[in-house]
Image (cartoon, rainbow, N blue to C red):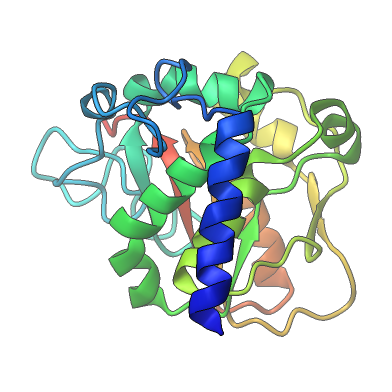
Amino acid sequence: MNRIASVIKRLFEGAVQMLYPRHCPVCDGIVKPWGEKICLDCLPKLKPVTAPWCMQCGKKLAGESEYCGNCGPGKHNYARGRALYEYGSVAVPIYRFKYGGRQEYADFFGEQMAEYLGDFIRSIRPDGIVPIPLHPRRRAKRGYNQAELLARVIGARMELPVYTDILVRVKNTVPLKKLNPKERQNNLKKAFNISGNDVKLKTILIVDDIYTIGATIDEAANVFRNAGVECICFVTLACGTGL
């Protein structure tokens, strides 16, 4: 029965692609060859974060230190994190993914995160995945939450539950790209809240699109720590370079 359902699903997906061809997450053209999720010529343009990386946030390091200049014991509210790509190689695709309506990019990016960050995710043994939420007004304007799309693909690939109603954004913050590090931290204070009175998960994996200095992840992790969560880790699609 599962085999029949799988065949039907593939036939349906093939029909959808015939009617609505998939766009490449890199060049945004129709994917070549047909049936792939990214143009094979575009794939080398994406630069995964390679070792050595910061032991806490996962940014690529230039030297031999275990931590980047923004990390170290006691500096963050989360335990550990990893990112898939160097931000410079994926900045334009992420912009289209977030602001250009390219929800379909989530299929490729989420699968890549599950594949290449899968060992890290399994090592922390999360009870569930929580995407960073958008404020309701921003989500209504955009029509979707890119972090949630990534989280759902990762959850499906790794057979982990995704919780989209635990963490809520109660403050409509200014876009972080317009702010310096100190302004980012102040901007995100009290930005999140827990929906409900009790969080029963002990280990949580937060999913977001970009990690810069960690202000968003830190604020979300702080809320979860206050709610009794024992371990908070994260994965993101991209991150900057460590100092």
